[in-house]
Amino acid sequence: MDRIRIRGGRPLEGEIPIGGAKNAALPLMAAGLLTDGPLVLRNLPDLADIATMRRLLELLGLRAEHDRAARTMTLSGAATHLEAPYDLVRRMRASVLVLGPLLARHGRARVSLPGGCAIGTRPVDLHLKGLELMGAEITLDGGYIEARAPRGGRGRLRGARILFPQVSVGATENLLMAATLAEGRTELVNAAREPEIGDLARCLAAMGARIEGIGTGRLVVEGVESLAGATHEILPDRIEAGTYACAAAITGGAVLLRGAQAEHLGAVVKTLQEAGVVVEETAEGLRVSRRNGLAGVDVMTEPFPGFATDMQAQFMALMAVAEGAAMVTETIFENRFMHVPELNRMGARINVHGASAIVRGVPRLSGAPVMATDLRASVSLVLAGLAAQGETVVNRVYHLDRGYERVEAKLAAVGADIERLPG
Ligand code: EPZ
Image 1 (cartoon, rainbow, N blue to C red):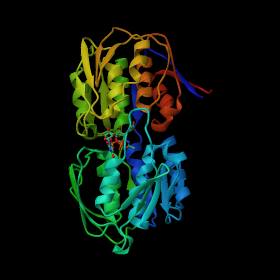
Image 2: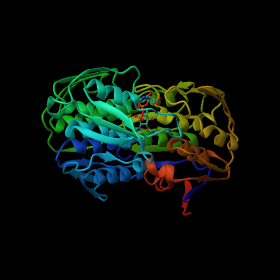
Image 3: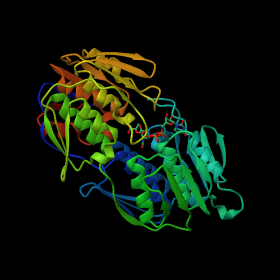
Image 4: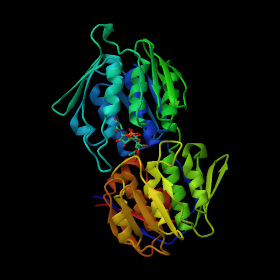
């Protein structure tokens, strides 16, 4: 298994290109099931999760041509097989996003229940309740979700008013896609407002879907009979951008994040500024630098535009070397502090009390062999390694490869002493 070795202490200087957003690309690929296509997705990141989604779509019967050099994928055809198997769904929970499109277009689907994962139990009850409100009959059998469109009604789902008791990115995406081909009008209330949802809605609209309220918490969809192909440019990855902003900040460097947009980062920009990081918007992207010390700032994760849970671990690494204390509260997932014991092994002083962690800043971290069991926790250890004295080896790099394209190459290009050790 590959590892990444970092020798810390070098300020990052230069430019990092920000790729297309993983969490936009995955639902956009699932949207390929709603049309014969072709659906052309541009600015596609080259990541392990994208390869997994491609395998799933091919297994379902779509054609998927991936032109890596052009960063483009073209999806076409219709599903011939309506089952997402356990083996793929357990590897990548976003596989469950094929449920809404398959059911809406083909009137039935069989998708493995994802089960728990490293950051929490992560149920899919909101996805299923919403589909039931649209008339679907859902049973659970042998670890699989068996879903059928209502009998009668020509095998189509019906529009419904769906009020989410809790904001869910995935449930909003699944139901939005299902609603585009349902009979009549669907209203999604308390829908997630993450930029990736707006990106999905804009692509669906380009395919012929009728959607109002894009960018708001109330999406209204008027179902249509069929959707056509389209060409869509995936928005930049705000979490990749936020992560490299923390890398510039933790090393006291100055980096241009080419293509990044402040409006996508929500509360993250203001929080970094409060901590003493300079974040400037330019026509080319975000310029992030730090010359003075870092101050401890309290944060609480929230749905967009609040502080993203996907930035919590990286911000905690930054707070580990700030002056004073910071309280970091995680409200989205119940088990997203796995980076804490590893950061503490590097000399951080962090105590977890329930959903909050108290971070007491230390002047310096020290390098150590570390590992983590999820993507953002892993990258927080890379950030800590960039600031630490001595050598850090991050194990289980495959977590990083799920969501960060060529992380070691991008960091090395701005002056980090970092390399991948093939395992
Ligand atoms: C998406 O996951 C992202 N994944 C996650 O990114 C991100 O952390 C998360 O949204 C929150 O922003 C993708 O976009 C592929 P949710 P998702 O449904 O859709 C609970 C990363 O590192 N919930 O918004 O699965 C759930 O347990 C990843 O890139 C239910 O209770 O998240 C959680 O507590 C990790 N029932 C909360 O809602 C449901 O049916 C928010 O989850 C659905 C969710």
